[in-house]
Image (cartoon, rainbow, N blue to C red; front, top):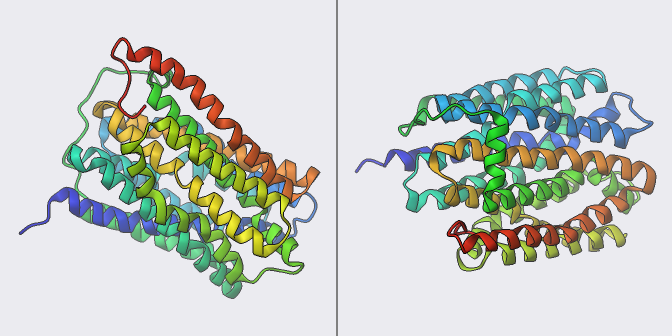
Length: 404
């Protein structure tokens, strides 16, 4: 009996997204060490924040463009384009010799890539509705699995071959993932041409949907916290230990958020089926916020590691919840743009988080980064509740989305 094409797509895209995610996390957390190898000493935290944020500066503007093109020409072509571009950029980064080289290549990275969101959109639009949310959550799990193994591989490769060798390996992994997509993924449900719209009109339409607005906000705050710790995490571990952290320990701690997402992503989506979005989001923000604050206040490695993992379990809610809301509440003809706009919101968080973290670390210390990010998460439910109060008013005229 032949496997349905949408299930085959899931299997292939799962593997491809896993490899791309692993390639990302085996490099990005170690960029501060890469910059240090180049001789950057003064302002290392700030340079690390700039290098990490540069990707998001251009992605904010370009991801919606690629999403719009995906709705017009198909999600598979956009995923393939992004994959080959990312592979080339990883290779070029491995040849960088100055911090500004890394920053420029990261800018190009943000402008040209987007393999994972395009793959998610492809699964979401080429899967029967009764399976769509589950399949999208499964791809999110693949991304999480990649983030688990990536830092371990990256730490090991960095110890043996240096960060440059790890970057080269990432380039190869992404190239393989793209080839898998080219030859094994089928896009049967191609988008139907709709009325021409502008990006500003698409953004306004997204904000007019209460659940879409909340999905974008949750994604932005979750990414700000997740990426905000990246410029300082390895260096903070060394401060807690009093000596340089081993590649294994660094990789293990860096893999904890991915492990948390892998273990809990589908469970968070299941909670969304049983409880209102506001309640699930409140629990996630509260747990992650308290965990981050405690990570910054306690200076013992034995306390930091379990607290960081606990905060990551709650933080794991943000990505799958946002994707599930888009999959279930957004019209199919707008879904490619919706995923792209949600990714732009996530990108905005990725831009803000590392910049805030870098400046905070240079002026207040690395531990303060966790406190500041935790406080922002604790304040977020107020914003969500305020917006959803307006959404409840719309319910009286039949405009309330199911997930809210």
